[in-house]
Length: 208
Image (cartoon, rainbow, N blue to C red; front, top):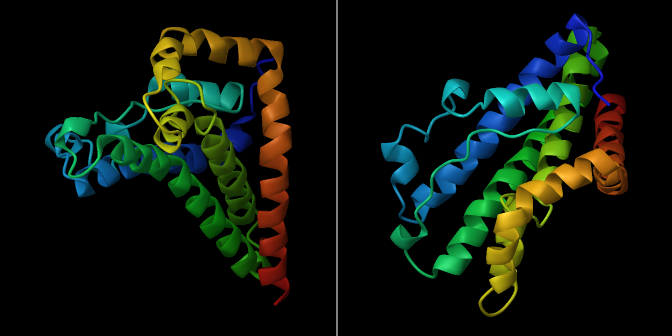
């Protein structure tokens, strides 16, 4: 289950993991800040300094099992301007959306510089695409404390009692997904098709 990468692979994955986690959490803080909550700003989390966001365990697991996490950005929804429910939806969505944007930008750079024949750079962009897609898809799973649960709660009408119940068992459910291999089916169903589209985009840019 735990596949230790080579040092070369680590060197390729490191920028993708650091940037993916950092911009994901920064996006949460930025979205909350724009909605009126200055909590992340006051706690020094409204920054793209990786040291403010990277969680050592989540960071390590991204190397070992293909997904992980960062330190959650603190958000106080009672500071939001407007409806709290919709505000939390936007804040939660900001993280995965940023990872998708990073993956798209990486695909563009992959294609644009492919003819330069820089193997390390193109391989690094390949990891940028795949890791950011994994981060986006994983965080969209509707199980607390992942972003997907807050997004779903913001979309569905009424009070979401199920979310409060799931918050007690969320970490356990995620462990079950991991150790039963179900997480692999989720990734193969969503990550692989998205990756193919972005690599096709890179190929189109390279050939243009």
